[in-house]
Image (cartoon, rainbow, N blue to C red):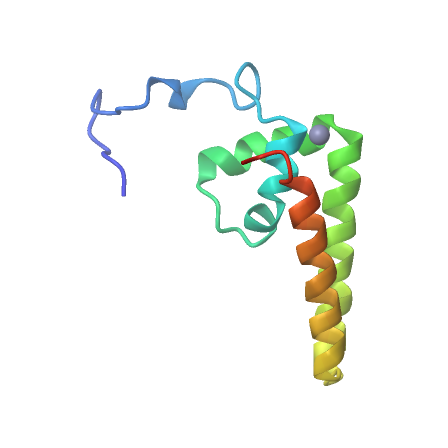
Length: 105
Ligand SMILES: [Zn+2]
């Protein structure tokens, strides 16, 4: 929920070009990758992560890998994959997420 009235915005940074100055770093991009891929992120944050992925090959690769895994998972589900496969894939994703956010306390 956000105020839509003119001049009522409590966030003066909203109008800034996404990623131009306060762009997200690799840590945040990886940390929020699932949020991003799940489209569960506010539009402003999506733009920042998107801008970072476009500029950072490492994170772009990571996002591409996650998308690939999701695609495989989706296909597997259509073919009624055994539950163990899902658990295994999810476990791998968890490991990655933990690694990516290990620095954050
Ligand atoms: Zn990066």
